[in-house]
Length: 413
Image 1: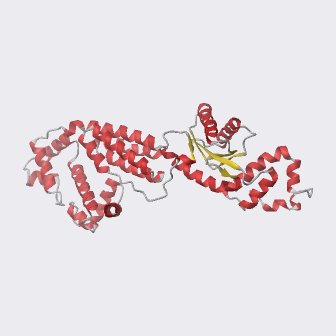
Image 2: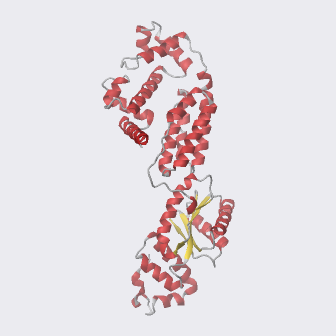
Image 3: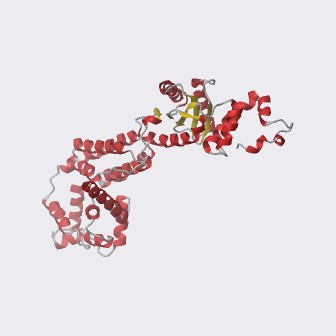
């Protein structure tokens, strides 16, 4: 760590000044000191003005010199040796004589070069990216700053770190420029319509599914919320799609949540979700065209008519309404719908609860629970709802309220 007391005569055993000590050990000390001072300047390792003044004095630099800062982030690199090799590659392509400094901070490499134009720098960074991919197997995302000055490097560094996060919206690992990246610092206006996608997938209409999924990602990319927020939207979309498959496949598709979480770019997520949504849509083609037997049709109609009844069960329907054998009805229902009776009823109730919460006509959660057949057991209803949607009824209610208020505000403006 840089220490301002290093300037005192007592800091050198011979009584020589710090500058004299550096001069006497120039070849060995200066490169290391250059890197150390700039690291501390960027990450705030002390008085930045004093660090910069010391740097300028030792290296005959001008604090107002026009430079460009670059951050290189390799995907998957963990060992310090990996970062050293990548930094060395960058130094070779840029040229030691042109490089102001190169250092490793956290999980990325930071470079500073005199401004020689954006086009030339981007071309060199692309060569570095291709070389790193070819030689070390790492994808390399790089972002370069607009023209800045040495005394503005700490602020520039923080801006680039933010921009690097927004590389999530890039089509692939490539060189980005700060001026090309839109960072959303305002209100998020994205309004996801998961229901439209679900209905398309359940209907077995592949063209409609593709249109809805592509539309979702087009709007998300245009709105560009924080990458972490965007990924939450994508996870919610994927879970809603995965629920559209049969009981025998839902566990397999739910494992895809990990793929969405670990994806590096929005394009990766888009491709994965579209692929899986079309798979599930195809599996629903026969289901959407299926003609149920009269007994199963009667069962579905009876479920819809009695969904608010907390005593609704397969045995109750079989004995009290349909007057048939309960075991036979259960097997026939599962064979024709692909779902167990209890699971089918739970989905119906959860979708009804979501609709009531979106409408906002019921103020209290226990009222919602009563209306969808959970009687006075609102706690159990909340547990089932969170397992089904990923959020509690209260969280879903607050989100729905926020959406309604913003729509109303937009309509009034």
